Length: 367
Ligand code: IPM
Ligand code: MG
Image (cartoon, rainbow, N blue to C red):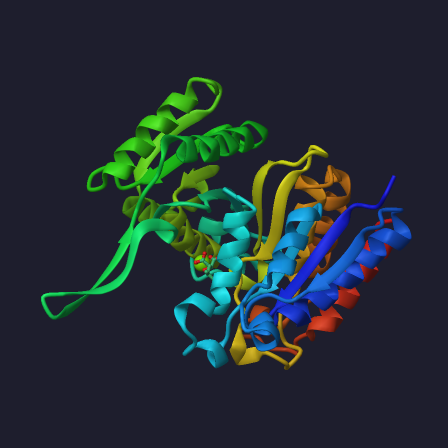
């Protein structure tokens, strides 16, 4: 059988630096675990704009549709701030999500024991934290029409539309309930049903889907209260299901609970393809970090953990995903730290490549 295929879109800023370490990890699985991938690479975001004048070339889009999974680094940077909205680097990412129909965005927020001190919250509030945010990713205010800026009575008016069909709410809810069944069997749905009709519909539809998952304990929360509860007592949550915009915000909030944005992976999943695998793209939650680009300082762990999610969700290699996650846990417990993980006690941080080195050693030791 042919090897499964991966398309790497490293993108901008620290994307290529962290992706280099992922490529070494991919090679390790090929060499040591008989798990080889056919890897191809292409451009996205500002890097694609520089070459093609668009943040995602049609050929790249077609490739993304044809592979078993896409690994994405990061897009954007100050160089592209003044570009027309339609060709901004972020549009490349949004096009991938939309055209691949990646409606379920899984954003785990897990606090590694070794890093509990790095959270801005007290250690006992975050130690052992393990929550999963499922963010609806292909609809809502990110894509709703009408949108734009136009003139009304000599004044500019900006418009975006929050729009959800029940089918869109339902398919994301099913993904969230399925995950809850495999985890702690608790699901909290977040919207603003107190002020938004789309929130009322959201609550109704999630409640209907719940009938098919009676073992899951379902609760509903207004998203603003959810933000507050996330910093007050995050361990009350298991799986959270929310819309595209609230999910964007709440997942950044949850990410910071764990101590560093440099640690968090994500998976964006769509419908099953002919081979049974879901359409999928994996990317770190952190952005392109222009302030540290090119300095070898970036933490590659979020991007490496995104590959672990690919092993788990696209390739049915849960045990190998566990192996990779355990290797990362081990190096952190042993004190390996990139610059973003340095405490007040100081010390010499590892470079991006050195962090890759110690993770590879830990993988070797796992054999
Ligand atoms: C994210 C990012 C993106 C989003 C940007 C880069 C378009 O913030 O993935 O959370 O808003 O969805
Ligand atoms: Mg975001």
